Length: 266
Figure 1: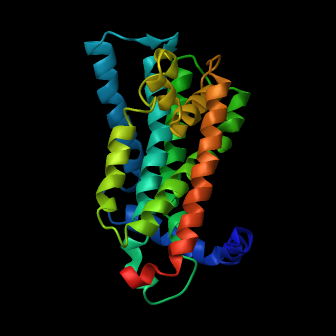
Figure 2 (figure 1 turned 120 degrees about the vertical axis):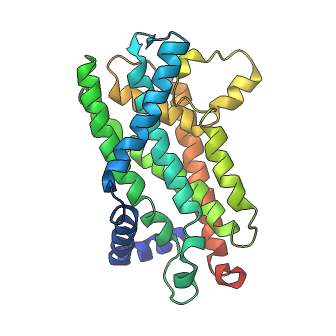
């Protein structure tokens, strides 16, 4: 039987190794580019500008339930990018480090955990940009902003849960490398990233399947913490948190079970 508690105790003892991998990933990501860490600001802002043009100039939508469309879009992009980049990084964490995995023993899950560092930096910078823009539009953050670490936690659990499943299985089944980008590509439209859940009418069973997407509730809860007087459906939030925990636990269990045989398939 898998002893998850003892496994994570071992991870705590390997904290120094995690920090080494984090420093390596940050250096590789930013040190050899002309703009460096500025890309963490350029990417979400470019996406924001494109969708603002679509909403305001083409669809003639300036507000969503009284909230400037800029804040709805930017908040969704910040949360989505953290998940999407984190999930993709975790999913390829083993394949991208086969030279280490085949030579040295260490808990392989460390590679997945460390791969969330770059998306985390991007998330923090995006959050700073959001705060500045929200003040400009007269929607400054309030005390509920203190709940943002909860969002970060559940987005991390979601990224790890799904990412570890793909990381442990894509070694043997290489076709899965093509599936994870599709999840990000189509998931963007099945998640309220550039729109609010309040625009969705829950009138049939398809809508309720949509609600099972854990990112729906997580992103909406994030907006609740960022945007004053933003209304949410707490039942939907509860479903999202439960599904996220379930996927995380399943992903970790599958990864631990397959970890010892990963080298055999490289």
